Image (tube, rainbow, N blue to C red; front, side):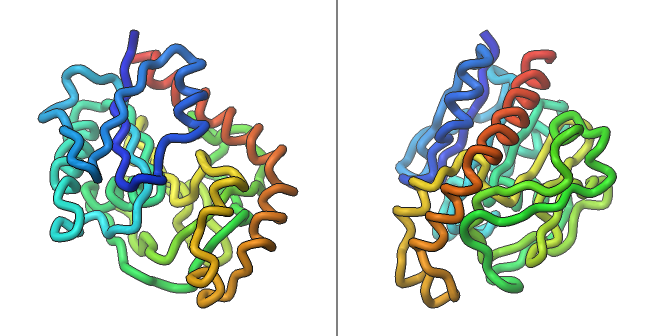
Length: 234
């Protein structure tokens, strides 16, 4: 059985439905609760894929999240050895960072809730994004942003407030600024006062996400199945 190493960076930031979908495709997930002292492996020799989840840190915030140094090392190893990578939110920013891009804290306008993404023409032949609707919805919860992609990266999707929503480094490493694993239920757990300070109403975000959920679920299930195929193909 092919195994995927999953790095969880916060108590609430688990793999969610993406983990379920990867399991349905026959992959075994080794979830490491890095935020709680979970031991990360020194290398990826026992794994065939790497999934790095979100969290409220910059990718080099070693003072507050000391395990990120080890995660960066694993991401570099994955890129060097062509191990498939899927980075979500912080995971995407970490992937961009280790590959030579730039991430800035609290950059631009924040995004929260179901957000419209636009696929770029370059996504038409991408292994994960090809054939998906040109405009689609995904749950966002972001204040930081990738401001410059690595030189060899391919931009795949953007939104009105965030130019870098999805990208690929090489042929088998993807970064997603949004949260395909999140559902309207996750939004109910967000800090309502913090959202209000950013100009969002939590209940309105929940209702919008519930409206968009059927189509979003179909799209992100498809993308996850395709990532599983990349992992399984070796």
